[in-house]
Amino acid sequence: MAEQKVSAATKGALATAALLTLVCVAAQSSALSVGLVPLIAMLLIYAMTQVPLRYSIATIMFFAFILENPDEAPASGLWSSPFIGIGAVLLTHLNTVDRSISALSWCSFSGMDVLLASLFLIALRRKSSRSKIDSAGRLATPRPLIRLAYVSLAGMVFVWLSGLVRGGDLSMSLWQINRVMYLPVLFLLFSMSLRGPKDHKMLAKVVLGAATFRALWAVYVLNTVDVAYDKDGHSTLAYATSHNDSMLFAMAFVLAVSILLERLPKSTKRLCLFLLPIIALGIKDNGRRMAWVQVGVVLLTVYLITEDNPVKRRVRRTLMYSSPVILAYLVVGWNAASSIFKPVKILRSVVDAQSDSSTLWRELENFDLIATVRMNPILGTGYGNGYVEVVKLPEISYSLERFVPHNSILGLWCYCGYFGYTALTLLWAAGVYFAMRAHKAATEPSQRVAATACFGAVLVYLVQCWGDMGLGSWTGVFIVAPSLAVAGKLAVATGEWGSKKKKTGPGAVRARVVNGVQSPGQAA
Image (tube, rainbow, N blue to C red):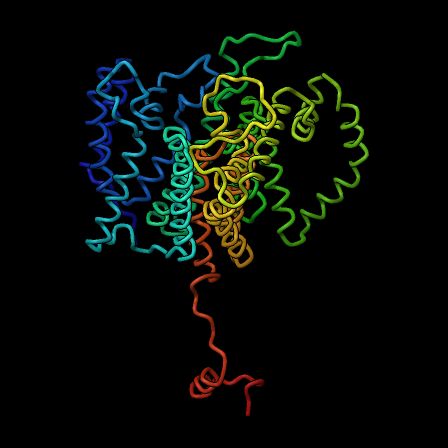
């Protein structure tokens, strides 16, 4: 089926919305923005009703990646772009955009909520009217994945109610729910929007394009923002863009490497070779060590799951011959202050809790989380209840400290307990399962790249959630949700799910004999 063309009316609506948005940015007036935002929203919703869902969700995904989220304190609060107002409207609750406007006090939802709810209504309307605009050529998502998305939502409600019954704080519980509700919801939306392998290229462009933009942004910020320097001449800027850009950079890096390892068109490989250094520079200038850990974990997993080949043998030989040099580098650089040994410092900060105050603080927080898990192993504390400070942590200016910890994985165990944690995370595990099945059955290089990216997305998300509060971030959910949907549809495309197996037994034998086909093992 040919791609649907965008009508002139739709293009006009989008152009008008873009123009009005630029007016808001140029004016820098909250009052004007409040007046224009509803009109912009209506124009965007009209455009979404006229085009396939995949176009709308991919566009929203791109802007969720590239726009600055004020809640993530871009450039550590020292500097922000003129477009941060757009990010505030899209990614944060509208009643926090400008607290001086009392008319917005009831708007405890974001622009993203409005757009996603609109997409769901559009999808339901098209389904009821049997419209083919989205369903034509669309592969089904495996039913277990759909069911697990509903199990995740049910588990979230159970943990929430069980916490409130036990005296939980309602306002804090809503912050905790916000961290887990969007992933299954977005997965369902992507399942309805994506057709299958036909849309892999579109998603890859979104990830690589957004990562390149943010990487260049990180380089720009690091080289233009006026910041203080410590006694050793190091910038005190903690990060250039945001913590959660680590996931975007790592995902794009792994995707580009996967493309280079497969037999894909040379033009695609040349593009990835061009983008990889830019993304690597973005990781470096953003200054978040977690990104390198994520890349390393995914590449190690890819190495372990793939069959032996010349590339793997070359890697083994290189590591074997260079191991004495690597060991000497680690030993010499473990306590060295020189920038030459920065990779060693990153490694030490990951494995040695005594390496810096931040790592030690998180180690103590982990201890408290584990202690709380042991106190409530089955049902957890429930949402609205914080973890118990068995070891008193140093005071920090963060009101959600005991309710939204840095280690989101241990936090889930703490608040949800055995049953709730299982309900919330089975969807992730099932996505990896389908991705691995598709990877083994893939017959085309592009299918293997997609499968690698899918289970890589979950690994990246897990590492970020373990070490840097990644749970529920817009960047995280827009990486994992489409990956889960792609993994399921890819399993169907490769015949690993939903395909009719060949029947065995007397009935199947008779059918083959009647059709004149009989194998030697079936001869009478």
